[in-house]
Image 1: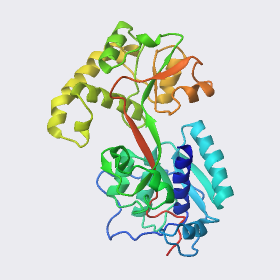
Image 2 (image 1 turned 180 degrees about the vertical axis):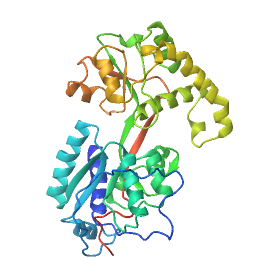
Image 3 (image 1 turned 90 degrees about the vertical axis):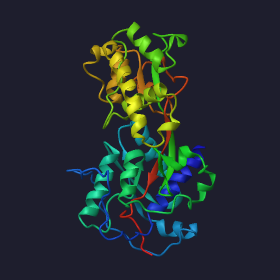
Length: 354
């Protein structure tokens, strides 16, 4: 599986190094739901665009030839040292040795920063921009899709896409929106809780949101969650999972239904309001992000942390940020998992012209 994922992303980078810039329809560039342009967008390696020989996406040898010697600016969330090191040491080295591609990892605080840069460059009338590839999913993907700013019709043409189960709705739908051959899966993630096995026995762990509220109120001040919203996606997942449990399933939430929301949102608010006085600091404040919650947990101020890390508690233990006795666990149901992707903007800078 690791080899498949590597090749999917490696082939995407090769394509990002040489994909033809597709013309945009007149007047397009910012769709409904697009975010305001960042005031100070991240800066990438500003080498000039290289125009070389033509390629045919249906002939991968021509893609390899066109991509050789190019540089790819990959805009990627930079908040994880382990992910940064993996990208630099694994992808960076392999791309250089195997394909002659230079990988320039551009760390960003939030994927929306890369989306805003693409939007602002298009609004400024630029024909090519600095962002060649983005680690992306969810609302950020949908924003660029609505704006018609994603390079089309490529994801199922890279060689190893034949090994992807595109019929799986967890892959062909990105937060309910059809992928439409605009992005390629990179990895998957699972929302998990982290506990300290030296403090709590496994058979004492809550296994549902209902159990969690009972546990939290029996141990006041020993649980909190991350504030939902920008930068707090784990908190958003926590709240969504509660909604799924209360309403009896996630399938009904594939698309937004106002009547369904009006029916179940009062139940969600009631659950959160009943949980609030049992939380750390009586719910007067919440952890702002995973790093803060991880610190609270490691300092024994609360008994649970949260993570989307595929290694569970492993990365935090290895980095010395969590106790060695930390373990990950999930509820019996409604713990959100998903795939994340890489995508190529239409106005990517390192492109060959047909």
